[in-house]
Image 1 (cartoon, rainbow, N blue to C red):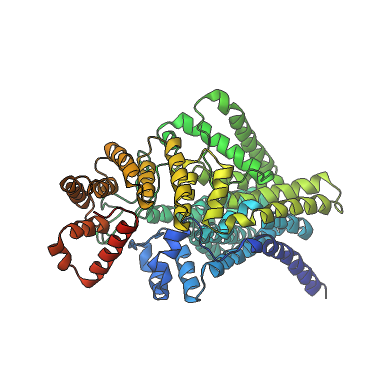
Image 2 (cartoon, rainbow, N blue to C red; image 1 turned 90 degrees about the horizontal axis):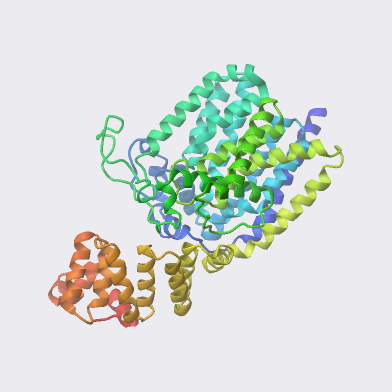
Length: 577
């Protein structure tokens, strides 16, 4: 009779963090898509069509590049299509995210239980993870379920690796390798799994365990090598001077017969304010040391979370000394305590290991984001649970845990309105990170969509003034002014953008459009140059058709309809020529 009682008790402990996750994050669910959801979910025909579930799951796409957004994260694409098949909108998709977070909270409980053998302390760790406000970004923004899915498979692979080291078996080895690869195909952070598995196995079974698990660890490294091969040709951010998406040409590693030449679309993004760190290794080291210290602070005391960040660029050792010292101490503590096979050491080691992909070792577009803390939170709460047990009497440690959980949950609930819609989200981003030009640009776009032209123009102007050398920001200001009927004020901004990027199709198009009223010939020439720079730019082609009635009459019905819509937009904005 003891076993059923024990199993029932464990189930009860496991349910506590899952219910806490629901209670803390459910009030933030709304029926709106947020931020990257607009491009990658709401306006993405691939994930909207249930018929694409088969192609998304096809193993052939591990070799052929599927030319769709997020082709490097096929597990995420498949989950989004499955949501579409179920007929769910934004609220249902966000609920799916929350359910994954609940499952991950249970997995944190199982990890802690496996490592500590103590159900109450394990539930304490999982409870802190479940209600932590840093998890809200991954829960509330649909496309960031990449981190939820990645962690789910990452945690499963860790558990399977530990069980394999205790008693090697083909089933646990296959489970570890398979879930490891699924984690990597969900999000890049899971690529650190071989190191995390080695740390977990050493803590659990010592050097003997590492020897027993050597073949499995080698298999995990092979999975990582395959993932690196898989990842290179697929979509990514184009960061000037730092990284370019995809591969330049076929080679021995990438035979032409495996790659059709159809590249997955790269993510379009504003040049970041911190772009100088990509070409300055010391500045990158100093800046990311400060970012790492900030992540540790946010895990322990999440009072400064923000929907967007503009990390200070640190160029001198004096400003970097304390963050560097803290980072070195954290490394030393994690290594020393792990060597002694302390649970706190394993927690700190997992925090450090899973934070590595977020430290710009491989160029990142975002230097800091709350979602990058999702994986490290699991290590942080493991370390916290171990420390609580060490510093308080066994029957009393629930008091500080309950207090911490209540405080974290209160912060999560307080931030729930931030995730209502883009307006609320980016207004909070501007408030909490006032130096971020991207936050102001995104708020400007949200205001423009809501019909607040004056607010949109003001925020676009502030964004451009924060980063004067950023041509796309200046172009956005010109677009905003033009859309709001201020073509005369928009033209100088468009010309400045064009002067800084003479080959930009967008700058050529907008400058040409705004020039038509003053000089039709010069405007036409700029529009023709825009179409030559980007033959797929339909706005330039249709605007040229509007200038030539004969060309307009020859257009197919669908293009004629779009031309009419464009003409109406020009009239409403006072731009018609």
